[in-house]
Amino acid sequence: ERSLYSSNSITLDRNTRISLTGSISNEVYENLKFDRGSLSLSASSQITKRIYIRGSYKLQNRPYYYTLEQGEGQSISGRLNLQLTDNFNSEWNYSFSDLFNKETGDKYYDVHIIRSKNTYQLNKYLFLRVIVQYNSLSTAISPDFLASFTYIPGTVVHLGYGSVFRQTRWDAASGDAGEYVDSRDYLETVRGLFFKASYLFRYKGLKK
Image (cartoon, rainbow, N blue to C red; front, top):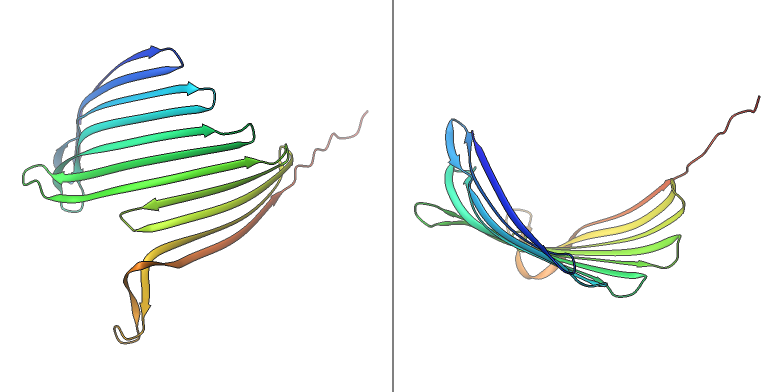
């Protein structure tokens, strides 16, 4: 296996950075050699004190392990960070990836993932966080809620709830005893509640 990597970047005002990266590499898997070369362009900038953006685009070769075939595809990612107030931060991420057979052009997959993370700091002890993610491959929406209380570093209490919604429904008439089938509507298929606490105890020992 081999890998040759090169990167060139330029830095501008407002912490703006533009990078062009390329690689020539391969991978040996199951006694087969696959091309993993890539070319990517990325840029990021702190537009204002409260707005940060980042994006990247990559063309890359990589194997499709299920059928041991050479694939090629692209990846796109983007991030937007909004410090709306001193206490409220909102972060948005988007990523896209696809893969095609390099010889026939047949598509193996494409997937979009959108993720939103929002945090509100009520005071120096307590913050609330909400994360919502959508995955187009599994057609799943996953919201997660968290409340965290930190008295001192090491003494923390967490309370959270998470769930997964999928485009499915229960069909009692399907199969021998019924089964889940595809649907346009979303159904909560997973849910969980958790509590976690830790306490930091400092023992100074006896003075001589």
